[in-house]
Length: 111
Image (cartoon, rainbow, N blue to C red; front, side, top):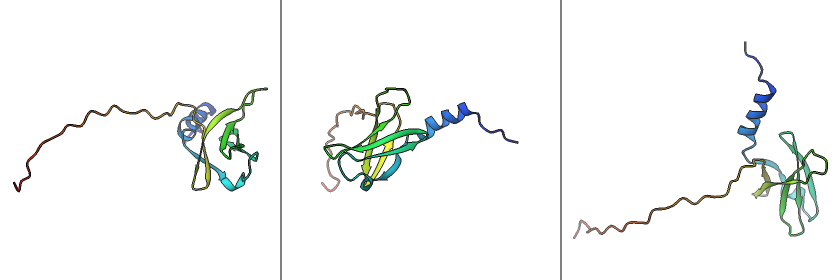
């Protein structure tokens, strides 16, 4: 007989397995004009997706604390669809050090 997971392990699993990925919200046509917004719930957290004056689509996490400022959430548009990522870790690209290329002089076999 298996026992159901407790709430703490469920929240830990949700945070590690699911929140770190990109999640589909809606089509871009849902917010066609600047000033339009869309409120969705992603894994129990309210997220507002808006189109600003520059026609850019941005997403914000709504904090439950009183007078809390909304936190920006990573947002991307691909193929006319809006995706958000709730992961708070820093995902800047780190350029790996590439060793300098070595020039090899070789004589072709036909020579």
